[in-house]
Length: 291
Length: 306
Image (cartoon, rainbow over all chains, first blue to last red; front, side, top):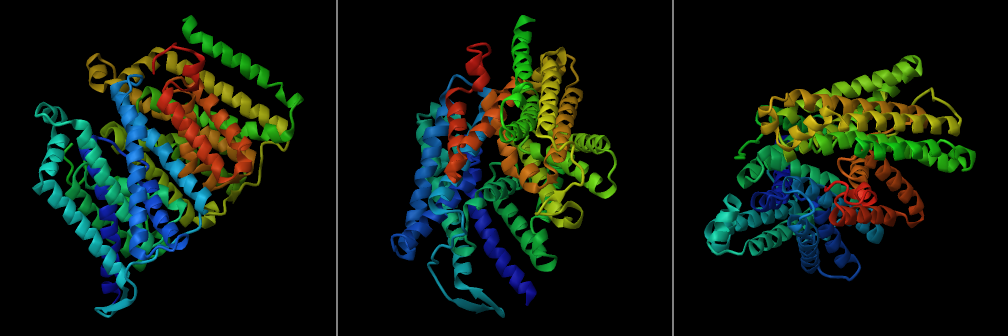
């Protein structure tokens, strides 16, 4: 009984983690940018959907679309206003740009978080779920919403996999992640590739944020922990490796659920953090990392 | 040599003038500045790692928190003289610095950044879990304070900041600082030139940790309370980092300037509530984007390209 409960809850949480981390790792793999405003973007998506539902009376689906749209716009702003500028500037030495991008996206994330706190207070908000009700699953009463979350996550991840591996744009993305200069020589405009990646990223983070808002609820305080968890999952799996992130998301998700159910919810995060430290010492490039 | 001593001279004159401030201003402003000075030390210690060793330490509060809580717990359990507590805090932070340095010698850039972030999260979790020892989320009240006079506290903080600034700045302009900078920018080449990269990086971690821990421990005995929200939380770490970047990377003294500016601006904008943090972050972001050299870069003109 408890075993099934852990299995089902863990699966839903892990799928959500996987979707959140996929976009994060995609951005790093292709453009080499670690976006520390990730959590802020996810919260913005959830709060956008919540506001559309409760302020303007949108339906559940329309609210979700508003949330994803808000996240997409913010992701493009992150790229256009901050990351792009820092990549092009000549005032900062090339090898130091990474540090500046980290700092700038960190600040941008705080700005998003504080703006949300100011406009919508920092109370926890739950987005109107698209499917309601509960089902009995192997003797466990499970909200349909939880299953829906896992399902959408997997559809999104599978869609991304197909797009990257089967479409022309996807192949260009892969090529750009392997050798940016080589792709340019083949006549591909690199800045358009980057733009495409940020659009995909914005959509993925938006969907993950809205689902999180429906499943667990968010507040502006969630931004930091969300960035930290995406960051740790991605490093655990190996930076830039999408399949590594997926495995890592399940490892972290199940470790947390197991700890929460079997020991105490207060200890929830600790085993995953310790595992991360151990992996960093033993195998710094992560489970499936290639760099 | 004049180039190195110029900023230092100005800073010392400014510090000397600041020492007379208690004669004019209210206790409220003194209290504010006392906190700002401790933050200045945090930012300067962070800049030694970030600006010179080229290590992004996302967990300055790991070292600060270790110093603060070690001193606080020791005092609340056994009440030894405050100096002993503070020394123990600094020692704990140094040990923490060595632990933190170990992965830094193995992994680079973002990987190291994450390790430090995780260190903070682990420390925070342990403080909450061992609540009967650490006071948990409510915080730990220490039985002793250095002084109840806000003037004395102010002078101690100012003196401590000046001393730390002097040592850290001197170190950064010394041959050791140059080697550190070389190791940070190109570890392979620095090694090929015969410099011991590992030794220098480890030393920079120890120095940075020492000052962070010392400042954290002193600040506990100024505030009388050690809590996660003031010493360990990631938001505090962000403030330290923003202070250092705002002041100007690789300037050490800029860290103090940035931290004081940040705390002062935060206080002035306090009536705006949540919006104040937004404005402070926005200003910092604009500085990062438009003037990567920071406040010191602005003051010093084109003294050193960032």
